[in-house]
Image 1 (tube, one colour):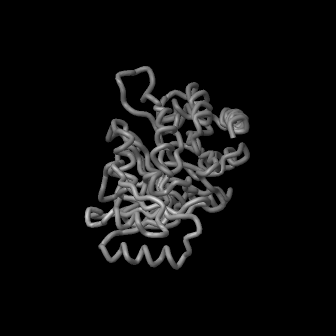
Image 2 (cartoon, rainbow, N blue to C red):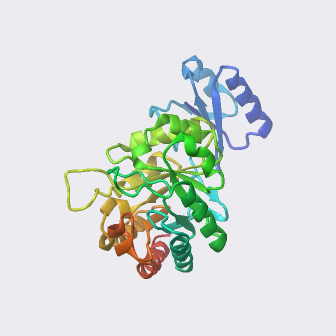
Image 3 (tube, rainbow, N blue to C red):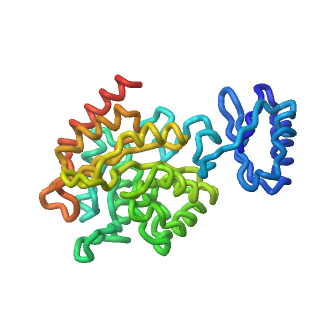
Length: 333
């Protein structure tokens, strides 16, 4: 349920109403916009007398929210959320270029790639330290050592870092990581999501390869319900009957998620297509669709990469892509 307050409602009046609602054992999410203040009521709202609430002098209207996701819902939070990561902002008109290798392989490799993508316009460095792989015999990442090398690359370039967590037990290792990524395979690892909700870290939540958008938003709700509202949604392709690409990139998800939710939406065309030549056109299409960021894999020597070299751009290719994406951004903003 949401209650929209009238313009001119004072802080004291709002606080008094919030206190009254909390006495009904409801959680109240207050969203203040330029034109209105929205109170999102979470819990057993059946005990709320809608007619009484609507009749209050400061209340403009009261509506029930039918969707199961509440805090991630745009009805609860009409304005776009802006996620702050160091000096970088994502959402609400701010755009992120996230680039780096699929996996951290050595200090020389990660620092070289970090410096290259920064020079080409990237403002966040990605890199895998823990790698979930389909085959148990494939490279699984450098784990804790990989995180330490990412931190060295951050020190060398100033770029915030994002890397994937796979298990709650590794959470302490992510203390200095700027954005914690939840991969597609863990999108519905609810115990992990709840623990991440108890942190104040921005969480990059990837859509599962066979999950609906409502399921993605419900996973975001798990994080937000524990108090962490710093969630970034990521469309990375879904599994369909098509086999020519690794997955099918669902660019309609950008518009639908922006309609349903206030959370930023970034797109990962690398994992979606699985082929480096398809990454630039899909990245540009994502920018044109209104994505709040692009996340691409860049390797200084893709043919020798230990993981996903076929979908990785070279630094030169990323430089060209960034120029094209920025032109598209200028055209649509």
